[in-house]
Image (tube, rainbow, N blue to C red; front, top):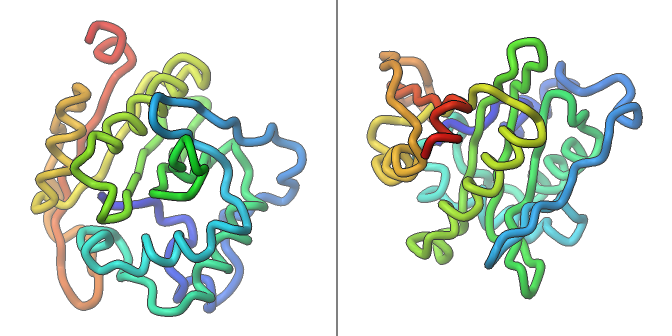
Length: 208
């Protein structure tokens, strides 16, 4: 999954302030918590630092992302500080948490949210030990329901490495359609990577 580019890479953070950081985040509504059967999508907590570093510091989890795996726990602290001050107008960044323990097991984000065009991009990830249990499907279904029914989006997009067959399978299971193939779109850790673009329209979501 090509995750959102909004200061996701610690190297960008060190180079200067985030260009997309809101001038007045308090003017926007707080991020809601969304409940599902086995998990919840909730705002990030200060206590998420260790689990967040375990997630983004795993090269297998970030294999097909738009940035390399983290190498320093300080990156998790910086990331959380950015998420706290972020405007929900352009980004909804949730922790995927186990419903019983409330511990972070993954992340899901709507980004590049465009009100005038009623669309957003989505990115998501799960700890390696939590994959293969249907939790990704559950998290994405929960977010899609909120996106289409509460945010009133009409289109949600995903940018995926064509080698990331698991993520593509998950998206297509939820009626995303392949809409384009972009050659050599990303350069990550010296590797040139292609992208598959997938999209889901509200009408297709409602008819499923």
